[in-house]
Image 1: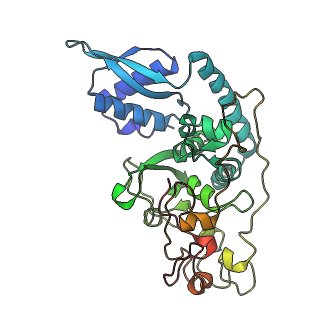
Image 2: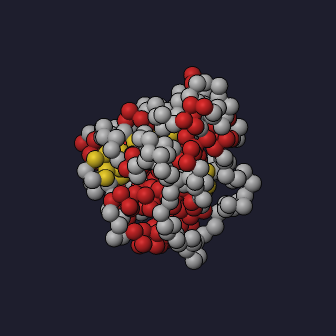
Length: 357
C-alpha cells in the first residue's frame, strides 16, 4: 500500500522522505537531502521508520549545513556496521516470509489473529529495553521486544500478508506517572478500522492462554486506558470487530462456554475457548544472535495477570478499572487480582491496563 504517513507530509517533506529512504537503504554514511529545519527532518525520519519497519538500523542523525546551500548533508547513525546490517536484512526477510507462508490463504481476520497469536506466544516483553528491542529484529529475530518493536513487527507481517496496517504512537503523561510513549497498530479488516494492541494482550495473557482484550477495539474503548495519539490515524468507530463480541463471549448471559453461563471466560472457569494452535516457524538457520538475547535471560519471566493488576510487575504501573465485561458476576462479587476494593472491580481474567512501561 502507499505509505500512510508519507501521504500526509508536505511536498518538501515528501522530497526529504524519498532522499532519506534512498540514502539509508544504500547504507550511505552521508547524503544530500532538501534543506529543512532539523525538527522537520526529525519528523520525516520518524514517519519513515513507522511506514517502513524494515528500516530497523538507523537510530539518529546529524546534519552538515553550508549557509548558502539549498540542500544539507544528512549523516545517519547506524545500529550496526554495513556487513552486520546486510546479514540481519537477509535473515529478517527469510524470517518474515517463512512466518507468513502458512497464513497466505487465510481471510483478513484470520491473518490478523495469526499475527496477534504469534506475538502472544513467541515474543517476550523486554524489560531491559535493549536498543534492538525497539525494532523488528527484537521480536522477529530474538523473540523479545518492547511496544515499538512489537507494533513494527505486526506491521511487517501484515505488509507481507497484504493486510492494511499502520503503527500509531500515543503521548506520554508524566503527571499520571506514564513516563513513556506507547505504540500499537490500527488495522483495516473488512473495510473497517480497528485498534490492535498486541503488546497489552501479550502482557495480560500467557502462551497457554492467549488474551484478546485489545483485539479490534474502537476509539471509545482503546482510549479508556490509552493516552491520545500523537500520530494521525483513521477513525475507528465500529465496535463490532472486537474479538470477544465476534466470538459471542461478551455481554450476554447464556452465551458462555457453559449452559446458562455469562460469557465471561474467568467465570466459566475453562478460559477462552481457543481454536487449533498454529505451529510457528521458530528460527531461521544462520540468524545472527544478539548478546544476552533469548528467553532464558534473567528478567524475561512472564508477567502474571496478578502482577499486572497489582503494579508489582517490574517497571509497570497498572490500576484497576471496572471490568470490561459488562455484568460479569465474577467482577461484581470478587475483588480484582490486584486487590482493588472498588465495587465491581476487575475479575482476574479482565484486568484493564492503564499504563505500559
